[in-house]
Length: 229
Image 1: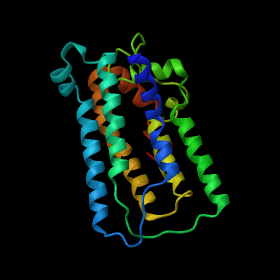
Image 2: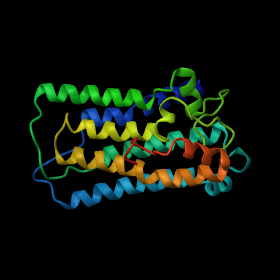
Image 3: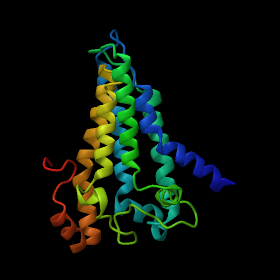
Image 4: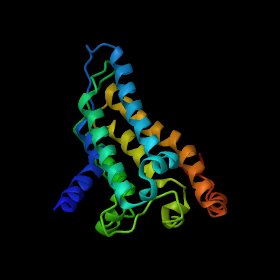
């Protein structure tokens, strides 16, 4: 029963970024400009928690022999979902530009967000999502260590971080739905956090996988956007 409840919670949680961008982030022309700092502060706190939980030293200190197991992944998923929901719940409206999005543009933007979400989970069926969230009895996926396969085919043969590319495009596409300052702020925060996390993650991958990841970097030189970076 607990496992089923966790599975439902985690699956719904995987959808929250897309849902937030479609529903929209807060905007108010009369809001104090200080709200920009507040929103960036709570988002930075979320990112710090997220990064710390991915650090091998933290995993070893907190989980010991359970590091790299489904239990660790489950805790990581729950904390990530709850803290991101907290960002959405507590963020404040910001002032700045706002335009009325015509229905046709909002429609295209919604389709683009859904397409980016599909690209983010293009590897997935329910069995693979179970691996991603660490369901009991499933094999983990998407870890930095050699305990999981290294993805090198499909979109991973085009760029090394196609999921981050999709997440970045999801945020930017959402500005067509809600062309206002608050939406753009969080689209940029999410996109920049993906970009800035790449060197940190790749350092972990090189340390854990060594020559296998170096060879992959040589075969696939682009990180996020082919021909650009």
